[in-house]
Length: 482
Image 1 (cartoon, one colour):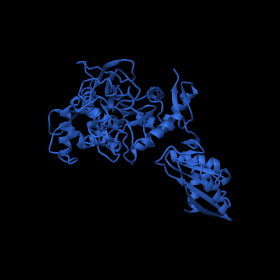
Image 2: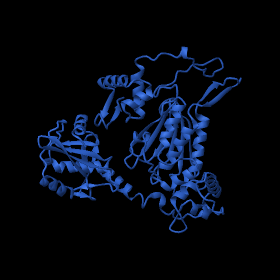
Image 3: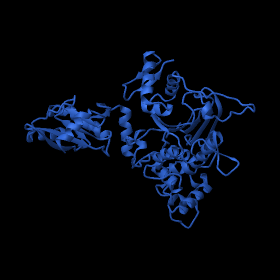
Image 4: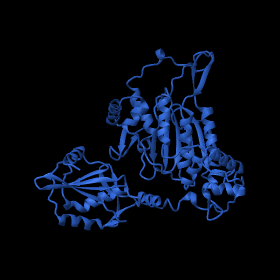
């Protein structure tokens, strides 16, 4: 590590993973930040840099390091930051303390857990503390690996089990057990617990189709086609009960039946070829992710599929875990399924891939089809994946142009109406009614506008009193004022 690197960090400013302290006299507050880093994405703290980013250094002695080591004893469970000394001249040094995200979160300092929000450190809310405790216990005890009380193999769909086994064998993802006896299939799939007891994961995957289960009400799919761009009026509204595989098939069928089609003429052929407006494989991957990663411990939960005039939403009840953020899902990341037993069975059946590449695959498929990747919005208790429908501006009602036969004719480039300047603010208001947590970049991508144009429109909306901000500009959310 060099002084040039320290200078570059100081110039970049404090962030979610970087903090400055003028000297080790602030070691107590520094340890709170290290605690927050360990509970979040990890981070780096520099002693010898002012909060404004001025490089001042400090005199570092053996006593300085001993005092730091003594302060580190306040971490529970133990945390051991990496300490590096960088000479910045004139007998002064910068101490660089680095911590990674801990596998034993939540970490507390002197009995209090902290979290990092943008460039500030604060006491961790009770809900977050409990969630991190749950994640720590996840490998040992979780909802899916508990026994399904009152269930035996006779209540499961044996045909679905055999289909899963044979597809797993065909793909080389499991050895043929030489039997098709249901209990042995479940054993081979790793879905039995405590000897021969059915796990809750086995019920999720193989309960009989179309039979509501009073003790498993969350095995539910909701599909709806809305008129317009909000939930004021239904054109179609249905609910289905059953196992995850059957529900996913119903969700796929709904989309095939409900999504608009795009027509094109293939050279050398007389007829027009109609294909779904969005790539089917990308939609299938998004649906699979919803069924695999949702929180089945929430009894009133479900997977929801909502189709509007301008977008498609796939809603999974539950939170993002293990430090994942919507932005991180579209970067290289490790696979950390919340329901590993269910995920493993979906993988063996060939519905999903491992290694955390599902969202990357969706983005690639959308780009290959000439569309923007979907956006992911995480709100408390739900994750929403939104696909913008090509040719539609999210938040705007489509213009109706009726032909003589009553059908909507194909649009031609020369007849595409020009958008007026007023369309951007109106579209932003409608968009933020549905997704108040969107960033400027996300709004720009969804609206097909430049980020600077979106910022100008938002500024005008705030000045006119039609749009407000709840919380900080970074980390809060928008509130549309009626």
